[in-house]
Amino acid sequence: MNLSAVVTRIKLNLGLVNIATPFENVDDVIIKIIRDITVPTFSIYQPFKEYMVFNGNELELLERTASYTRVLLPDFKTRNLLYVFDVSYYDGNTSGAGTASYFLDSSMVLNDYKSLQSLLMANVGMRMTNSMTAKPTFHFEAPRTVILYGHYISANLKFYLGFEHDKSLASIPNTCQEDFIKLAMLDVKDNLYATLKHYTEVNTAIGNINLKIDEWNDADNQRKDLLEKWDDVYHLDMQPFYYL
Image (cartoon, rainbow, N blue to C red; front, side, top):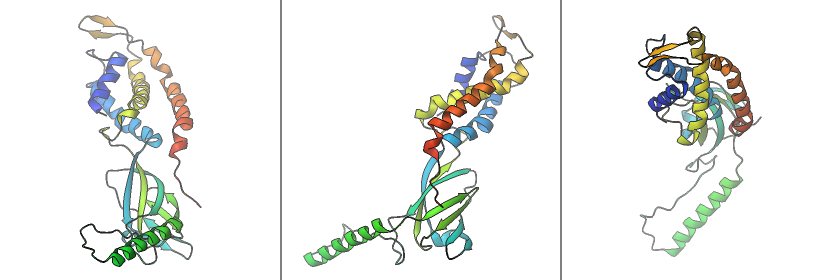
């Protein structure tokens, strides 16, 4: 999504194009509302999802007991981590204790059929072992702590993470655009209403225009209704898969 295009669409929809308002720069006000209010809220329901692989020995160890290990995920700097959806062993592990996969290098010259057969059987056997190895169970504690139960600490772990979207909106897919704009529109109405309600008319090049600001008075309730709907439609699919 493009932030500038979203701002233009909101201004067109609300009748704020080419009119004088009490704000020094209404575009900057709308952008701040979108970045500070809309993006964090929307990300709760539709976060930016990404897989990341970390070696267990490289994660900062906070606590280790006979039943669990508490580790700290890396600092993602400007990225706000919201969810840990899943944790699994990474297929590329070669730890003797954890899961592992062996792959045949196509560059190898194998003239001996028995050697080839042995490698293939070893690969199949290891994949069967992987499939029978229980996934690590976990619990996520914001902002970056993960408690892992019954896993091999030396194994490479694949984390399925959910982040807050980028403030530029570039990480929000076009398939989510309409829902995002619905929320952004209500956030802008709700936050501009407190100021614009004192102005029944605004000046334009073609004369005075009535913005019908009173229609914005219910934006807060409409926003609550929208989020309640998303609780049913979106959030059920976004529940973090942690196990205790």
